[in-house]
Image (cartoon, rainbow, N blue to C red; front, side, top):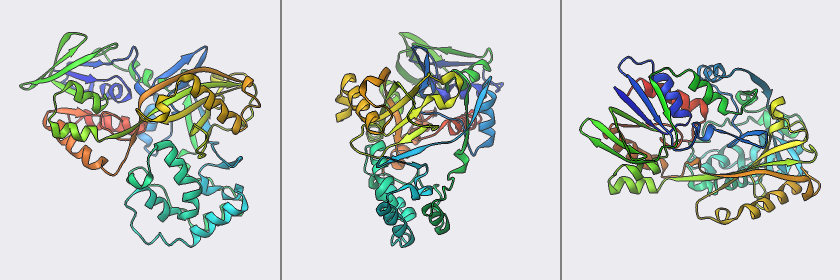
Length: 430
């Protein structure tokens, strides 16, 4: 039996890793449109530097999947999180609610008073904004959570559901008072310690899986898939003009792209078109000096600074150190919006302005842009219609015998550990 997997990102590669153990599968063929596998877990190499498409780090509550990811690495660096929120020129340790004493007094009082006397906590939360108000109160919500989430998602949180946030723990009154009195309380402790490949970027995890694929598996890159059809119990795929037959198909490509090669009913196409997602711009920037301290990621909720997060690659280990400071800068956008219309030169100007504003450089001459890239599919948005849309889409493709997997193949905001967990699960139900 031939299993074909559309796409060559982590979900595809990890699926092949698990599927190769099945005796009923003779061949696994992975078709990737780019010139190399990896998808969102590719690492970009430019002028001697290595960085990722966003800050991928290795941590998980799922100890089995974490152990498996680490097993794929030749060497790793074990690190302790040091992330900061830049608020009115001050560093507030992430997560925001655990370091409130760093706020100006007026903002501190606003956050604490509205947490302790919160009229919203008795209500059910049906969207992200309601969840923030119910869990943290008006002060923490309006000071940080709402502006930051509006910035990263480019979406009003009252029109997003609670899938991403409903597992965030509610701080106790004691924890908030300790935070307000000057004690920094470590939050989200499952993220407090993490690992990262000693070299090669996060793509080293993908390459580790590839090295463990047996002779059943083949990866073909530079594949332009133009057609997928069901013919009886089998499937016909046209890629680069070549007809490829398959007994089973798994799709890890964005469901939007799947609908372009597979004829779906009008109703299903409508649900696919109603899915919401963000694209991302990644800029790699060097500065003359390191003015950001011994920290990794910095979140910025200010509307007039274009990037929402900036991460210092030097923090990740010796092989990533630049001799000064090298940053990965993230700017989310949506196809057709204002940011999408900006040229790279204008983007560089705006990013440089932001770097100056947050104090990571003293003047523009101290900022060097190494690279800037755009990636269409970055973040799944859990809008209020996401569940309903995906229920119809999944039901249809299940009827067609096509298995959906991956962040954009199955249209779920999964991190690497969850992607691999889902790949393992799907390998035994195909």
